[in-house]
Length: 488
Image (cartoon, rainbow, N blue to C red; front, side, top):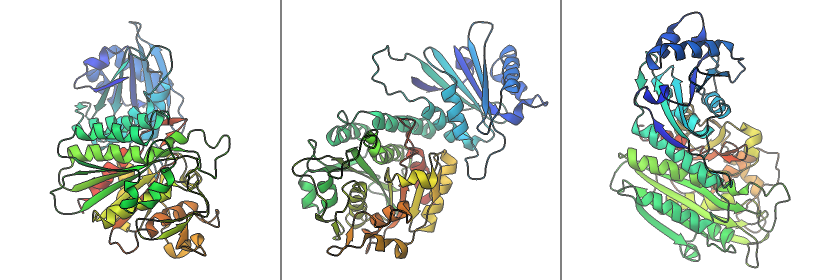
């Protein structure tokens, strides 16, 4: 479905299917909403929208009602809940996503009118609409020929022009979702890197470097190399930098890009391996965020690091009991080949801090199943060694609709879980009931010992892949977080 952003009311009035999203309290006895809708649409459509809004059955995430208009077109009214919990986003992003997905927008001309309470809710609301309508498909039926025009209305009833940042972030999040949805044979490390380079080269001023295969060992990136060395497509690290001549804070975005995770020699069982094409959701998120930052954030140096590998099995697969030497110089005894993502991230983060001299390192990864237990489907888990980074991520989540929640950072409690008799650490914990998400993050952080980098970790395993579809989660979150951090 082709997305556009409406500059006037014409796409709304002419739509074959119009979705109007407004808050529950706006459908009360006062007729302010009806007056606003009459200006944006026309009087008959406004009256019908008000009637539908009052008829909708409202739950905690809102509700909707739909009807055919007199001209045979369709209008759906989604009613957003007026009572929002304090940890949710004020823009009701999940309600917007759910009601948009349920509206049945398909072929033909579609439009969504978002009645905003606050202009600042535009990004989260538009991003939620984009998330509701994933467009990757390999079904043999005729592809969708639909279009969707998005319009945001201010509290005064006038249209709010969509700015370039919002437009770009919606596009980048949808690109990230498409990458996650792509079958793993079609998106191996080489194909992912090729697609990423094509997008990166379209942005002026971006410098790209790629380290592939055995060249990783020459750069002391033993973790990335070990995980991917037996796959048909060689492991690699893709590095891109924007605003290279800028002084001030240098921020790295590091993404786990395991294009398929069999579990390695500790192979996953039936039912656990399916959907592991999504194990590159972190790399997709940092790519999208970097592309938007490279275009719209010219004041700070930003570097992208995509750590790409397929965790395959074969004669030269890395084995339990192997000892790897990481980029940090730390040695790791392998006791779980299915705890591979942290090996990639540890190398990528160490490289960012030690070789590139980044002041702040933010990593994103579909790292643990425990993230879903700890913070669920809607909140990513964050673990940070710096209070300002933690707060920036939480605030950025509320602004962007990509919600996240902090978990404990306490190396003194968690490093002992990785004790090894022959190496500096193992790669999997002794006690899987002891704060798994924080422990997994601590493995990455441990490999930053001795560097001066401030660090933030985003575990987005469940928010990045919901209902068997990629969501593009993390793109807007990381963009907004970097903007906050470079203002400090």
